[in-house]
Image (tube, rainbow, N blue to C red; front, side):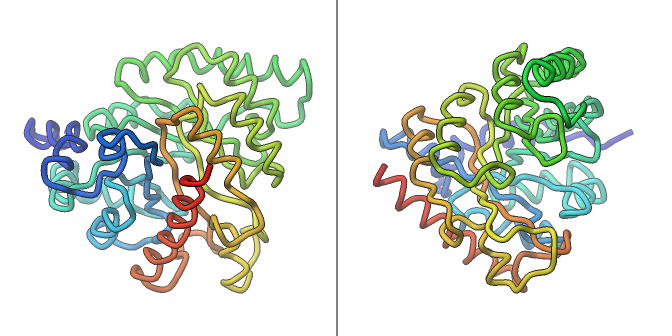
Length: 312
């Protein structure tokens, strides 16, 4: 039988925002609401630190203007496997020690039809979001694409029912070579979804690097957006590159102007997650050599985004 989290730990996980305000923990979205200003609700992707131990990653979260982590499994990270090895009770202890909550679990390996037990785990951890991809044909256009998205939505209904039961939102990323990988497919998913518990995790990396087109798309699908990846294409992430080129995926380094995109988030007072993101090559390595350097690099992008947000 799997370990169960005690009531005290479960209660703590579910009330992290109020705890943060009471103890001055950097929980910036709660403070933003308190001050009346709009701020991004940052989520820290564990895979940016490669296979680094959770005990070393969690202290970094508060330094990044967040109190929530996105747990990734192999091959990108191995923190989901670390959770399994620790057991839920020890994992909850570690979260409480560092005043961090689980904001998201990313699960491409399980796929959209294999998330039911993961959603029940998420509920026990107080986690409200799971990101995955979409299954279905990848070569459809127009009305045929809409039919394929409708068929996927129909397949998802029993899983959405579990999402509603557990309070979890299944967010589908527009990952390359998936059914949901184009602007039209994202619009169809936003239109056809049967519940707010089926949503979108929007990744600009996989779309045209045109600010006007991206911001228009974001406006169209905004009610369905649960996660925004602050992630641009740069020179890509599929081959070995000099580190300076690889880092062009990060906001503020590549050519993409995030200002119009942030303008849409701000105008709609976006309440979902913003994840500063990139992929290293090969997968599973940290984006930089040391934990400290990774935190500095993420904060470099965060400062860029926050400065833009004040201007839009």
